[in-house]
Length: 377
Image 1 (cartoon, rainbow, N blue to C red):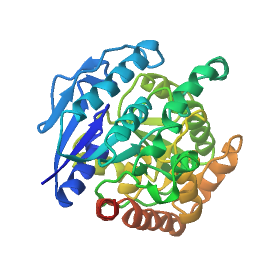
Image 2: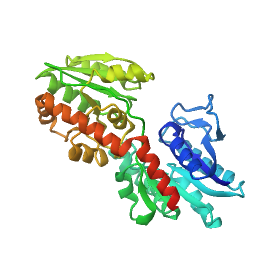
Image 3: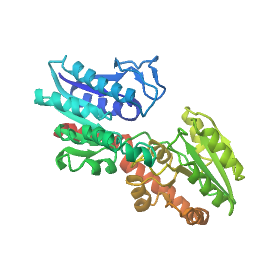
């Protein structure tokens, strides 16, 4: 049996790795999966390990923008290549990127092992997506260029490159031959709910982590403008360091907030989602991303989007009519559109959202795409 190796610096099992692993197994591979033993979100070493996953040591760090983090990623990339060299029978290696150094280290491995098929999966763009101010970007440019080149100069050495959105794919297109590059969206199961317009009230949902990439100012502006015309309610599912600030600012403008806390139970999530008409997909402008897990979760429940994310999501909202895009400085116009939506028009948003999810993001669609990519590899 052929052997395949999967390397991921982060624990992306639920959103990506489980589907990659299953596709490899369907293709006849015996699969080994390697994760970092350091949780890059909690900044703690992993205490509860997944069954069937092997953990490689990574150096700890405490700040995301730090020399210690770069050193940790460089060290982990070398550790992954060292592990790969232990296998004499490996036929395929899958590498999650970032860290960008994974591209450089495995490109060098590929030069020495040309018979091994190499697959990169681009799930984020560093440094493009870092939510840093203009001063940091300006004075950090030389370092950022080196960091970016660790990806751009080496990503084309792979036999196959996956990208989680077209926005990312377009950024690396000049470095990767067209026949090697595939946009493979994140996916999840569909969860049936039904929501409709309620007279004299519009309920919005914010789901997920409330951190420094959430656009609190824009959320408040939209809710304030809507609340001038009809009653606005904000439902919150999740937690994060910016949660208290969001709650405070929304309550100050007189909008009711219903805080559901962190919800893992799908039945409870569906009960909450069914009370809402729109999902808020609003992030700060500095973030470079084409599709978020947040928007995917909204769509998996048939919830239309209030969106400012450019790239793929903006195009889906615009072309497939699954909600309303918000342009900078045009919050009032967007609020007018939201309030003026009729029950019939809203139902079309909902039906369009469900149709898009089934044709693009449902697990069966992604599984079929992965099967075809591995077959052609």
